[in-house]
Image (cartoon, rainbow, N blue to C red; front, side, top):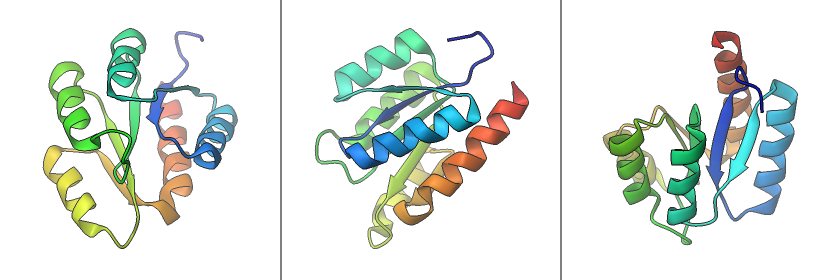
Amino acid sequence: MGTDTLRLVAATSDLFLRSRIVELAKQTGADPFFGKGPDELKRLVAQIRPELVILDLSSTDYDPFSVAKELKTTFNSRLFGLYPHVRTELKKRADEIGFEYVVPNSNFLASLRRVLLERAEDN
């Protein structure tokens, strides 16, 4: 991991989504890291200080909203949330917390690609 390499941390139990994040990270020169639960996620963020944290807003493995609040408060993390398009209440909650990016699952990969490319240009 180089000093100019964009780092991202993601929390998802979806193996397909995880593989797509890895693929996009490779294509855009980012280093992806994955946390399984809230404690591991917070430890990774504290250790790595990523430019972006990706949270699955519909996760039942952890409470993405309490994790997001803590990451915002403690680390001032930039948050990227994804949600099923039929669960618009998740988007509303994420917006209230201050997520920088909140997109439906169907737009996630295209949106993440755009964000990673923009962030890579900024670095």
